[in-house]
Length: 355
Image 1 (tube, rainbow, N blue to C red):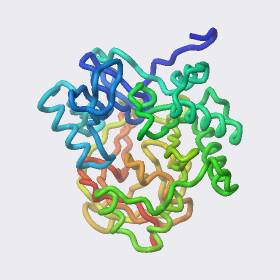
Image 2: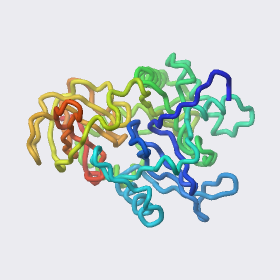
Image 3: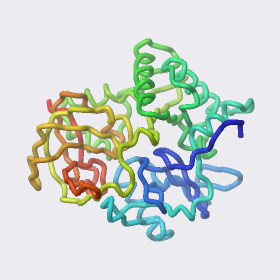
Image 4: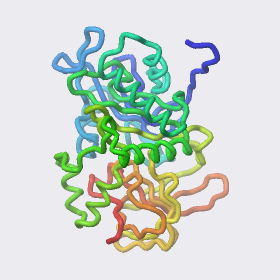
């Protein structure tokens, strides 16, 4: 490891963790209990899997990023590894969370990119990943050390024939700088960096939610998907991740209480946290139109990546999601928020611009 490099210990969104059973989980968000890491199962050992590493075959536990497939991973773990299921009474969720005592490797995206950048024996997909990170660094002004590579490339399970490139970039300000650079590259008609085609065939779950949008909302949905594209013909995604100093909340600061699914509307006041996971929108003039009525909803939070950066400041939005009361355990103050992308939402929740 290079001199002066300090390996971080905190768990961030899009890290991977590997357990004693060779289960590979993707970390969700940056806020975790002291003894567990909230994450979802991505790969598991299987004699019939088409991903291979060091002679061992793996299969994908989650084929598509939607609630029905996420529930399949939970069922798999409940039957085979129930210790990885977790109920958190502060966060008010039942989800998968890996006990820290079961983690054998914490895979860091920025460390992997640093290693790949020093090697001469890269395969074509690894070479493209390093190349894309370099292009984004040069065009955004964000140092290459603030980028990482995640997904199958991070854990050496990628297949050159069909795997994608998944990059991370770290820091709130850096995320917005990279966003601007990528949008500029799309507009410049750079032959190597192209916007992802809008005529892709959506997954069944995405197709169902797109049917909830009118033509104008559908147009905005695709126009604002800035973080996906093609680099030299290979699909890629860029995932901005907050760093510790960006976080306004620590685990144990709040208690969240579920009040069921609601529908409502409001005006976006602040969208500066909307490109991260969870995406955060501060709202004003919020009004519940269906479900439990409260008058102090001040935030929309989405764990569904489809609804990140989908609405801009001063736009009116429509929302369907889980209503939560947020209690500050220090001061005792309370307010409400609406959460999109929860298991309770069953994939039928959304954020969309009112039009």
